[in-house]
Length: 424
Ligand SMILES: *[C@@H]1O[C@H](CO)[C@@H](O)[C@H](O)[C@H]1NC(C)=O
Ligand SMILES: *[C@@H]1O[C@H](CO)[C@@H](O)[C@H](O)[C@H]1NC(C)=O
Ligand SMILES: *[C@@H]1O[C@H](CO)[C@@H](O)[C@H](O)[C@H]1NC(C)=O
Image (cartoon, rainbow, N blue to C red; front, side, top):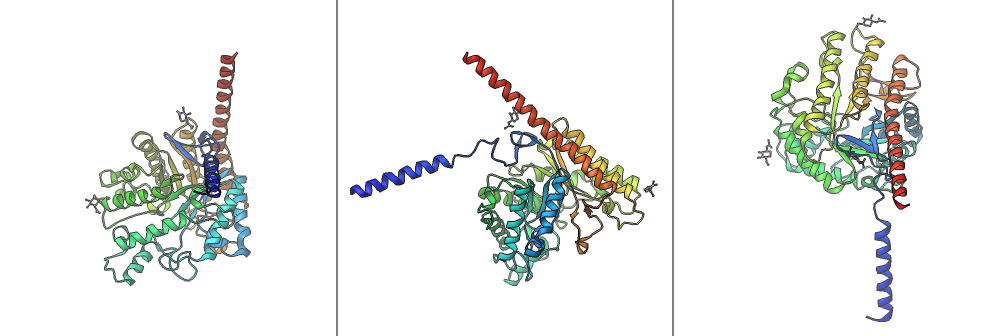
């Protein structure tokens, strides 16, 4: 080795060790990732409880630079109401204006829309849950994946081969990898390293009616969860389930029906960090009156909190609930009653450090989005009893997080004082 070489060698060694040192992960308390400690979430070193919103449209709208102010308004209005968890789609599959127009081919314009959503989420202090594919046909979904493989000669019975066909599974894994390893063109941070993202969701509302035993969904979930965690160990992962129980407990489901998923077994998979529940008594029990629907809801939420606490020993997030004004007999006090049941059940659990993390209503829109109205929308700048209820309940829930932070600070000040006393 010449002198120059050895100098270069030493220099690069020095750089290498410096870099290693710089790359030391920050203490968990400070790094801004939402994590799990036992049966609750933590953020800033203290138990984290918060409500939030669904806005599936964020990426789609942000892909048009003239419309981006709507995304900012959504975050601004949400945060003002203490809604700091946002759930949205990180997919749109097939068709000319999709994120993934064909397998493995990505639309950069749409991806920059998602970059913007994540970058703004970070600025406004909203934690995001990004869902990776749809069970249903909106924005492509499992049916689109199956069509793609059929066009390449695969023989399949129906769209539920999404969960089993090896080519389809490899398409989906490629999507997972593409999203997780995307480098945000605005922040420069890879999605898998971005603490603005709170969690990945495998699928919006997986169901498999062709195998109600649950084995198909169980196997698929397990395979995809392992794959995702092999790329990203920073983020939490959830499945996107509505909370339907398997055949042995299907009497707890609306109309006693199984859907090929199993709230217990699916969420027991090691790589699944927390459970999710959706609640639509107005659709599930559409021919029953409001009181029957509310009774069902109360029991449904109670069962899931109990099972998360006692069997799963994992946190549970109520990732969708709502009531549509399009249902016959609707009035706004029914909507408020439904929101109240969800929020107060969560608060009862959260107040004492329990498993219920928060609730995300379906769905938040902002002014000027009439074409997105689906009957369930809430526009936070349009005053209503529902909007005030959201504001009050969410403020109350977020105060629990603030109380836990304050308690933590007092404890650490005390232990520092003790340490200081020891030194004297
Ligand atoms: C996790 O919880 C345990 C027990 O509740 C507590 O002692 C510990 O400080 C917590 N850790 C973090 C990082 O919050
Ligand atoms: C699920 O996986 C197990 C173990 O690999 C296998 O034996 C079983 O056949 C699979 N079931 C389905 C329905 O895919
Ligand atoms: C709304 O509906 C409930 C029954 O579902 C009824 O008891 C109540 O009086 C209605 N409120 C108004 C303002 O119409």
